[in-house]
Image 1 (cartoon, rainbow, N blue to C red):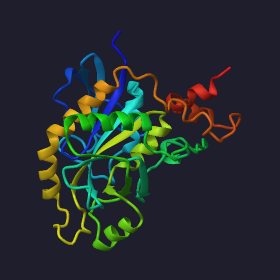
Image 2: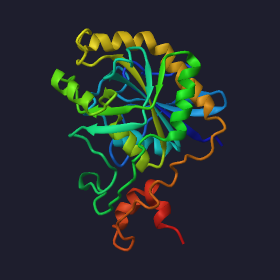
Image 3: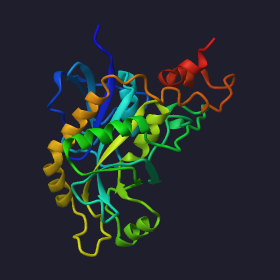
Image 4: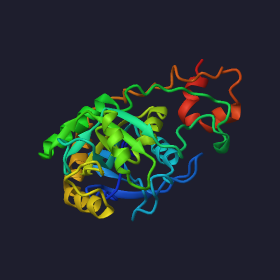
Length: 296
């Protein structure tokens, strides 16, 4: 019997594979929410099995608004993942957070408007009638965030612990007016993919943290060139080795970790009366909620 896959990694822009994985196999999954962005690459780092997924698909074929976040996260759940590390590119909204730095944020602000934000009560996905209000006051798992911070610090790269991460819809970049307003709101970094990834990971009772790689100053900075795709890619390419090493360090840091601290996030979140919850929906989402409906 193979060892369980407890750790998942979602690679963002510029991170489409993990060369350090050994004993590799590709796993193609289907989910109640459709197909994930690509096949999961499952392999080993040391003695631990790890699943990797390119968020935008290999070759970057899917824009942030079209990523099937629910399928991606659900697929990791199907594989047994408890700890999920996201790697993302982001822009900085603060002078002291420079391109080339890495941020391990502790807060998230959602400015998206065209995404499916929950696994639950969605007629289009066949989950209508089961309502869940999961707590995300702290949207990133503090335990995993601490491990990620230590992992980046070990590389010697400049790293910031904590910060407010705003997710915008994209795929366009910000206007100067938007960027300036986000700064007045107290936002520190800006990206396009962390919502709804973080919230879905919480609904799936997985620990989630993100390593946010700063590529630019968005468009607010008077003395810096506004962000472009070329700028993002150039910075990412120069930091790819650091990004991959930080992930490897985090995986090793999880070697002795116990069960995810988020393993019972839904225990008090299901508000639908058990007697009226549609049986077919409970069955469809058995992987997520079965243990709460089948208890003696």
